[in-house]
Length: 460
Image (cartoon, rainbow, N blue to C red):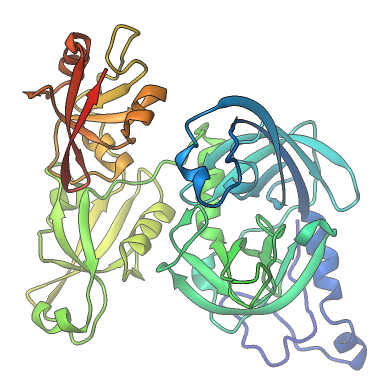
């Protein structure tokens, strides 16, 4: 467990809220630089070596930049071992470790090496591709060094930070910089979609999953990606805030294997300068509600289409990704105070935070060998399905969960909504299954993909 440290170079930096930094008192203290901080923090940052067995198709065009995209579904599949290298952070003395999903999320063999060269096997407890986070448990350990989580809402632009990780596999490395920006929710980096801290501390391949720590040795973020054209660091790196990491650890300890987000059941868009005046705002900001599901918790709490959401749990929100982040860090089963502007007047609503309801039942069906599309997995649309696939709020019918090998070759995608089979409307999974069993030499599907409807015709 780390104690607050008095480190050099904090002389010109304003101390963040609640931090107890001290000004160096002598030339000897100044000459230490970041050494005391690194000495305390580095043992809790680990190197991760992961293996994943994938089924790769072998074709004469494999690797070709043009033809490969057309022949991905042809040829025999052969198992191949895919290796990944990254970093991780120990968060408890009993071996809870956080890293990135793209480092360990789908791996079957994970080895974690500590700074003192001890190695342990690890298993993934919870993984989430959308947030690019994974929580692991080391096997047979106790008394490990670990980092404390700092509330990332207290982080300010300009604070000194260190990035600790294993760039390019050269071994544990430390780089320094500052927090360059907060609430970076307008970027999509790799698998991650959401809300980031930005830093100019050098982050390179292999740093993924490593620690971003403040001057007291507390974790403020998990390094996840960079913006670059060359592949190296250009001073624009992104870290997942520690407040979200805390919720991942909580859900992992509660037994979840995938991250459960509170469901908003609404669509909204950022308020720009052209919209602000008409919505009764003195400046652009917030999210204007455009549509709500019939069982949305925001609707039940009293919000209406046209309302502008300014804050969630006392924190400003200016994009949908920011609002999802704020709801996620409040946590499931809690209530969030939502500040809303309606007709120029501010009001506060208390919104319960829960996952999307699974009512009515999905009644999931997988088609059999006698079906025109064997191996197709379909479910009835309900609020949970709407949230899972990002479907239009008022949609109903049958959604494709997994197209299966045949369905994928025919062009079906997860999230497609089946409207009709051979000219006959279908509204339930049973009706889809029966219609596909009756199909003979030709098959016609009417599919809704997003807001577009397409007709697909096949010869069986």
